Length: 326
Image 1 (spheres, rainbow, N blue to C red):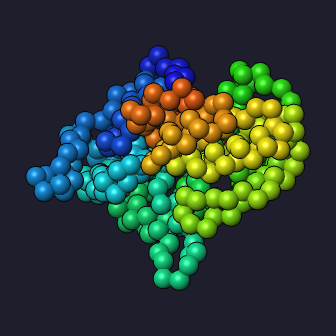
Image 2: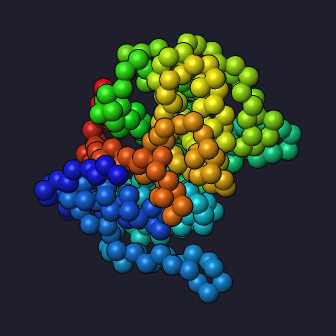
């Protein structure tokens, strides 16, 4: 994993007024962010009662402080969500001045609309829970759909892993590229990335007859003889990724890579990835890898600690977040 550079010492305004906390979801990332800012994580006990209920006690004085809680809602999803909202409730009741929920991976994001009768819009409910728990702002990266920002009644800073991926592609020195969106909905993301790389795009015409099931019908765009880079926000079971990789190979792509922000990697994901004609799956550390995933040689993990560290620092100082991506 590529490590972020560490600041020598946190500035005085950061040391005196900013506190970082973490739940149990991704402490490694939280510690990397803290190191980048030249800080330590705030002291808190995040455990369980005998019956499994979440038990949280904050051990630092947070009165009047600018508090940032780092907690992705990854596996185990519901456990981590409860840690997130209860931790924020504790911060609010301890009189923290501001509470920012730093959610590197926002779970339930794929349920962002009604796709069938009598189903919930889970992403909206989770947004309501985070707001009701006491968050005054949310920082996240690569939401499944950008309109989820509108589900919140508080400010949302939506970061992009594009910069991290661009740096990695530059290091690989790949030539004759084409950026591929695995579906029509991701074309805007692919177009923006292709513009930065200076290459063309293609997209996949596919259908989903059931969750985590995809059938590829067509490849729209020229991929023959090119190194194809599949760009997506989430890889779950990697079934779709495998199908897209095989379709690109059938249509003449010379090599296939995948850049995906959130490596959920559930079910038979590693088996599907190992059987797919994909040379490398590049993901970020928004979600910690399972032991099985750590053994997969096709997976490369990039750190987004610097990205979040800069966003936290700019938030604390009231500086522009969009300037990070210019």
